[in-house]
Image 1 (cartoon, helix red, strand yellow):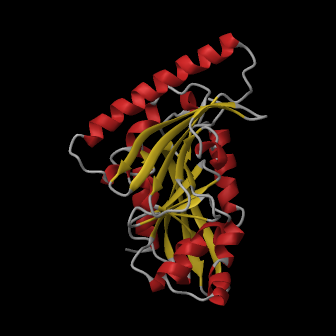
Image 2: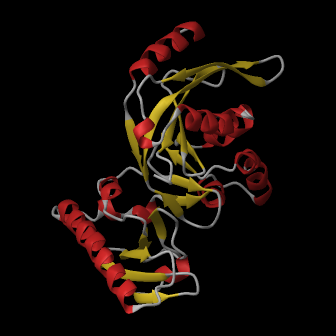
Length: 306
């Protein structure tokens, strides 16, 4: 398919687009986006018996790991928390724990009681969702701790690169500084040794068409495609879309293209399916795209303020 045909095809698709993607994938984690958390921050922690640290899916702001290592009604100098274990010692899953943050230190009995009531509603919904998935007796839907790896772990343990090669291979990822990379086997690569993934619904807003100029080695943006769907009720306005896409296209080659077509993917079976920037922007490679010509689909989360 020529680049002209490809761009024409996507112009038609995005004119009708009204799709949304929920990230992360999984029979359980796809269900937790609608828990009634209000303004509270919620973290779900998954820890395997042989894993040194738990992996976290969070809604709102991430929960400090030190808090998740304890259970009960907890307070720090910054916030009040409730930490509750939902599953424990099942096969090789040490625990699945929910931690809810008030976002402030609750200094009165009334505030603490209201917080605990909200927490109980959240926990009741999550437990019901656990039952919906766990009836088959298969623990696999809850094994999120196996899905998240650091980039350095992936390059060293799985691709068997030495320290020098790891440092060289990490350069384009360090420049782009993505939140995470979703691979074709449903694993996530995070850039730091902090295993946390933001959970959310991403709405398709359009795509970026590109060609790669072999003579100068630069990515030339050809077209920006936009869906005609009105998402202003979600806070996804034209201004918001413009500002988010501008973050990606400011240095398109280094921010997106160099990650999607990094040389490290030649060493493994996995391929990057999507790259997340800042927890708000999700870039996916469209079918038929390659290093020279293609389209990157752009998905956005609803702004946090809403």
